[in-house]
Length: 469
Image (cartoon, rainbow, N blue to C red):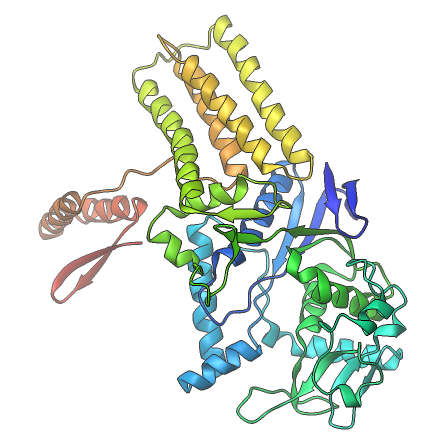
């Protein structure tokens, strides 16, 4: 399996630190609003990477944080007159809803920055002791950028060039820094902001230190894969490397993966341009499985352009796979129960070649575009090799292959039949009759049957109410 490593600028054979295990950290969102489709791309891409690793038999420890203390969260909290935790908790819950809608698996651990302050204070203290950081008069703690000789190795930037022209590292309080390129590890509180006590001042952590600490706590000092959007390469990931390697004295991450930007109708997404879409906006027009299909239709390192036309193409592609599975289900209802014939076994061997093509694409730096093409080839094969009488075993084998490959991509292609409101009401009425007749076993059976189909019943004083889960 080859992975393009941002650190080396080339594809490298993946060799885990510990055989059979993968440690993976993905930078999560800052939770001050509903997530937008730009946030969704890394979520979907690296969820698919994780799924493929698990398919290959790896035990994956997948950590993705929520940044729940930040200037934007504080600003929104002050606007609403509430505590910052109210804002972050609200949007973590909303983010998890959207992730579920996109069929993104929950991380092994979703750490929150505010719950890891102790580890941050410890790492900052260690960096000061080792001469990699210092406290200014007002209690702000800065990382001594030039103390880490390899600074710039991920972004391939030169410190002297940064000093001369690029000011994206510079932050407020330059006059108290030893070097304009030093960055903040801890900053003093401002009026109305959340803060924590520290040996240097009451305040809160800088953004970069958070991920270094959470990665170390949940994955260890040395990890296999660190991933995120390409906008994080510099300065965020560059600073993470500097802090982590200066503090731990070990290689921080062996492979760095970054997805490219998402544009809207060939323009950068922005609220001012009026082309800003949240995942929730998209869910009102499309099944979020279509959004997932769209995101995987290009290689993760290629810029992706979002448009109504491309989403329609994704809808059509996704529907083709779903229809093939539905057709197999229909054919199985009348298929024979005998063992596969010799001719069917030959066809099964041919079907296996599409699985091999899928794996070949995924082994080559997770080329989901080619992996989806392999699924389409399998669908075409299924559509042309299921005419006439076939055994149930043969049809089931084909269905299993399609659903297995789709599942690695996180695509749900086996649709549950959705009950109509009148059917739900009829079952509720039957349940009420069963309860009156003291047939509680049947009443429970109906409740469970509805629950399996995503219908939750609530017994109230006004009668039985229902909602879709």
